[in-house]
Length: 312
Length: 312
Image 1 (tube, rainbow over the protein chains, first blue to last red):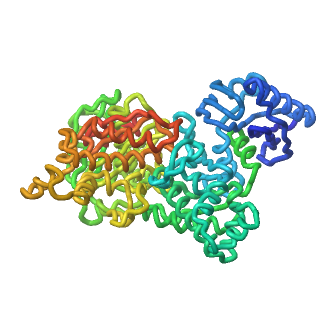
Image 2: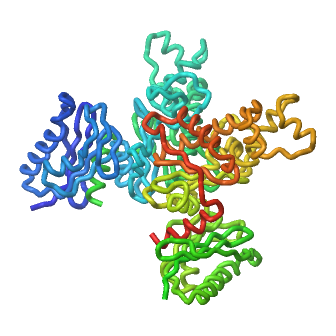
Image 3: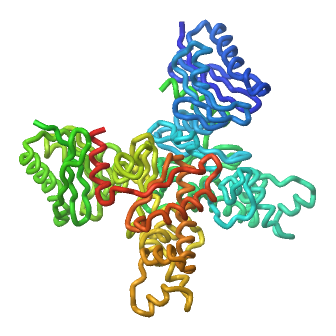
């Protein structure tokens, strides 16, 4: 009977699951809906049932389950709160272990497991100390030190989307703070910078606006690649802020490499180039010339990282 | 025959040594000069001889030696460079172990062991994840995560004195960068802020200047305590920058507490109050209300932290 490891990545609308071999190869992946009603009481039982079905189908043995959730989690698997799931404070790790009868169970924050996944099988391969930043609708982060997640004392380690990169900012971030990295480098942040500086006749972006086409981060990076000066300025401002933020992370944790993921990172090498440039401007000499890589696993980073916690 | 542990803190002019009991009590401390000539070749032999003398005097057994040095050190005790000692790259850990015949030897960076020492027996007692910042002539830092030093991939973990806290700064730091925490919060940094903003008739500081009395960080904090408005402004600016920097460290590592040491911290509670105020302004909600403590061990923090590495 084959031994399998399960990686679970719980999101606000779907739960992603992956079945891995003992060698860490992804055999199969699937999704189930996240039932957040009744304070999310059904979420763990649904996951357990889905794992058991897959186990029977494979006629195998489940040797370990790793899981990521969208909120702070302590090193011993206590979820401190997951607003998106309706969860309060409880040991999801103990509960999942009890419900499945599997002893080898680990739970962590979703951004942190994505970082671990990218280090293991993605853009961070070959390194064991990385900082991952995920530039999506918001900006998430995860820090891996010598192969282990830097969880933090209250599960908030790696929350670099809310590092401050501009003490003079007057507009507020979703978190309530002002001048967060997220306000400049998320998909919405890049558009915010662009709209703020848009002036008549400056750029193709203005034409888009006039034609009623929604300006996106993608359009801005595409414009910069094609030489649009105004788009290039927005990209420089993006890089200035991300470079500043990552330099400050490096001053604290001195990683081997940075891995940049999320929707915005699909713009590709231009992201790495502009970030590296401003990173080197801001970081001390001994920390210059770190590696900058694009993430490779996309939405699968979570299930990879989750399983890495129990297979390693 | 009693078992002893030795803590060593190597500085550019003196080496501090401490003899500790098995229970971690400091029994005796002494110093020897640091002989930096000939690329610092004599430094380790001098230390070994001094330890051996003390061992004979006590007729005891040396069970472990921990040592801090002023430069980056990898997790396995390889010194990457110590300009102040004349040292290049070599395994000081292996060499010290070979020279003494003691197997239990650990070497780390001096700012990092000071942080470990303060966590163990000083201002950070009762916590196991702290960030220490030392405000002296320069600004040093050390980060302890779950009782272990965050060394970093190239030994530069915790170098928070060179985090950037002002992207607009035009003057250069000693490190060559611009806008480093050190430029505002070191003893010289505080004076720099004061001198920059000094204007006629504004403050008792001006009188000091006219009388030819050198302005010091101490005078500025004393002035603020006594209600001098101008001194208070300088202290606010100090707190603004230190709060901003420590908030960004917290976003990365989420410690339980901050410990502030070094000469500037002798100003006392005023340092904690003003730093905490701006820290809470800049940090995300989940990271607010961390503990802020003053360091307690002064120049002994290093020997305590050094010994903690081998006694723990």
